[in-house]
Image 1: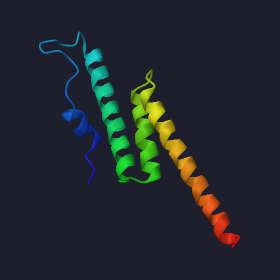
Image 2 (image 1 turned 45 degrees about the vertical axis):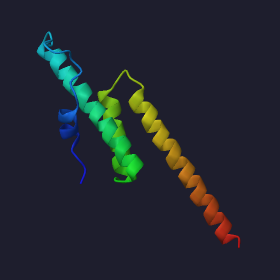
Image 3 (image 1 turned 180 degrees about the vertical axis):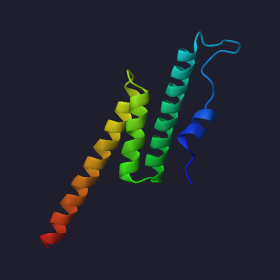
Image 4 (image 1 turned 135 degrees about the horizontal axis):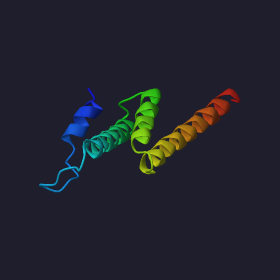
Length: 103
């Protein structure tokens, strides 16, 4: 069973220094959203590497991370990397099918 992204975000260490507090509730919610987006990205990468999720679920996890990490490239990079691997896999399957049908 996969951990929920919210649980992963709650388990992630805080990025703030000890004793510091956000200047407003807006910055606090922003930090929460970024932490949650990073948790989604970690979950997506883990599920991808371990084969724990379907292709559709993985794309959804990566896209959720991208939305939460707007202005950063990391989510988009890992989503593109995943799409590249899917494309390569589809090419191998297609070439294998062509080879089997021509025999």
